[in-house]
Length: 414
Image (tube, rainbow, N blue to C red; front, top):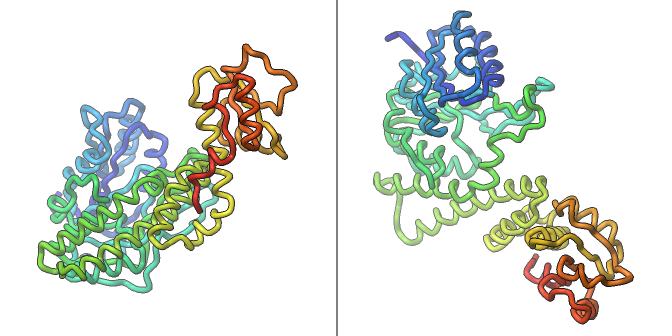
């Protein structure tokens, strides 16, 4: 095993169809160097073991390690890395693919540059159904190498290009100290600090990885990375701050008040730009309340004119109001009717409420002709104005179930 060049490390759990697809791609790899596929199975309960055995029988150079219990995604990847014996290691998600030509080029670069401990590159988001690349995650004009402990130059590069150093081929000897648990600080920035602390880090122009955004196995699935984008902006900031802390402790960062203010502003701007992406995803999921929360932070941070935010400004108050009404009614036990009183277009408002998730068992009606005392406590009301609210109060409806527009919009400030 001493001549092993590359370890392709695949953590997996209960995803036999995806793993089979990934291994079928691995069968087509015809690398010019010895390689192994290290699979760490997080105690799958499906037919993962049988799938792996099938490909081992076909001659694929797989080393399979099945954990006794599911230890979570982090330990599962660590398990794969620890069992790797190649000079270099690369992580491969069990539903993604490598680009052999790009891998060959990166390996040649690493062999020619023994000071480099991590070789990063952009990657493609790939539509497997239509066999086409959708986009490239970040872009760089040319290969660039950052010498050991060139923390500040590398940080500036990350900031200027909005770079996410998530896809890399690593010198395996550096992984033991670099790939260690981090939670509040985004792993890719934290580990980048560890890598550049102990060697040079390179960003290559040529991609060597395809992340499957549209899978032929489940075309309608939500891409896993989207959840991180939607919720992890503070982890991104934490990762950048962790990176700068390491730089400061190594004596490579000016820690004067003025310098810290500059770097703090850079971390803030980077984070706010990630929030703009999160806003787009939350709007796509019709969660305008979360989008508005992010809007407030972006606007206060000085990015209120960001295109993702500016486009929402006019529609956000109404959509937040409708979603808030939906939330309030759904949250109240025993409600089976919602009255829309004095609305110019109750049908459209009703459709929006349903679209926001108003429970199907709650009937939506316009102003009723009569008021059944038995239904008063089971009814919520959205009234057009205060006089209508007062009228419903006189009829005996519960005061905290009679909403007017200002109840829903007075705190939505755009």
